[in-house]
Amino acid sequence: MLKDRASMDLIQSNGQPHYGRFSELPKTIDLDKYQYKTPYGEVLTGWRKKLKYKKFKFCSIQHEHYTIGLAIADIAWAGHGFVYIYDHLKNEVLEWNAVNFLARKTVLDEQPLYNQSVFSNSPFQIEIQHANGVRYVQVTKYGEIKLSARIFCASTEPLSMCSPTGINGWTYTQKLTTLACEGFFTNKAGQIIQFNDRTLASLDDTCGFLRPETAWFWLSCNFWDAEDRRIGLNLASGVNESYGNENCLWINGKLYTVSDVLFQMEEEGRWTIRSLDERLHLTVTTGWRRFENLNLRLVGSQFSQWQAKISGTIQQGEKELIFLNEYGLLEQHYAKW
Image (cartoon, one colour):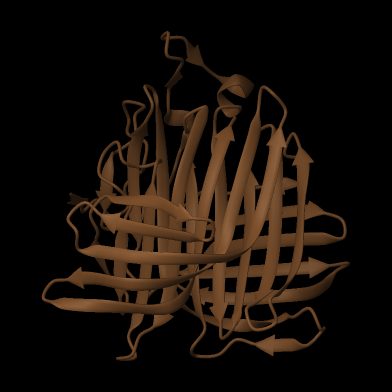
């Protein structure tokens, strides 16, 4: 299913995307080439087409007992930015988020190889740039740098895929985990904490014409195992299963595919995830939750992203990978947009 299409444009000359998993990132995503039709065959252009297009970037950094999450999203009728720094030992969080209606002061550049995005809502600004295999992330408050990270992507194989969405849309996603990270952040106590050679980062860039009403589950995790290997995991259900799935495991940067998975809440604060081929069995316990609930009748969103601890096993080839209370993220999202 991996397609070797180096330096391809995601959108073909016939106005439709390439579909499948790709061995390398597309060179460009040229939205002008794509012809969007309603379910009734009407071609949409201009602002009506733009309103259907959604895109977001998410970055998480795991440093010792700190989990950092930040995002910029452009969902056409609004721009959204958030950042949090969660301290697992003290069970406390430093958090900020804002919404810019009609996506004002929101620039999200979805090009895979070179891009520059920014979200501003005083007193904060989030900047995300990407060039030459390095992701640059910076968060400022009143112009003072609160987080600065350089994230190195070259040593890890990317998940890059595009799948049909609904009757007439598509979703492109590229994800990376277990990435080396340099820089620093300021914690809730005002201390400057430096990243080190055990810090791991994950990236999620997604765009497309998603279903107007959609929901998904997602889990992300990266850690050093007992054999000192970089282990990364990406599992999802509900968004990219129309042509394969986006489930994958990374071991020291090498990507392995994972079968379809089922997310089940067993009781409040405890979930199980198992794969269709029975090679993956995980238990997820959840803690602090980043929560949003917005209902504007025509549009709305309910978003939960939990700090999680993940235990269980994954069979990879002849070996068994063991998860022992590893830090991770569990997400449940409903959107009507």
